[in-house]
Length: 95
Image (cartoon, rainbow, N blue to C red; front, side, top):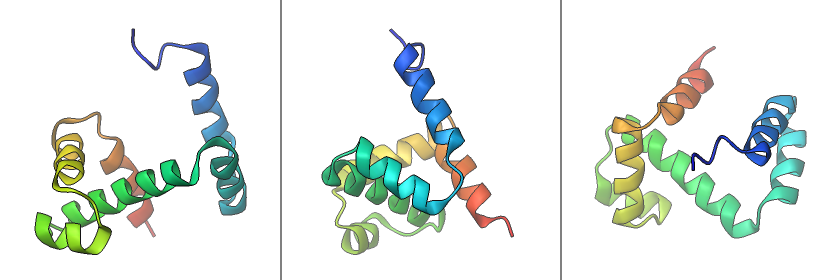
């Protein structure tokens, strides 16, 4: 089953799109996720940004505390995934 073809997934996507401010986003994430889940997601997006900057795995691990398995997984997503990391990072770089 495709995880995105569920009512809950559709609702989650709509909820994210409805957020308008950083404060709203913080409040939503705090209610939705555990502190650990927020830390894990935060680490992954930072890893993606550092990979985009062509930083080596050992330096990324040193900066983020991410395991080589996590860095490798994020790298696979950045290279072969759906393009989510790239789209978000591109959008964040726009003036």
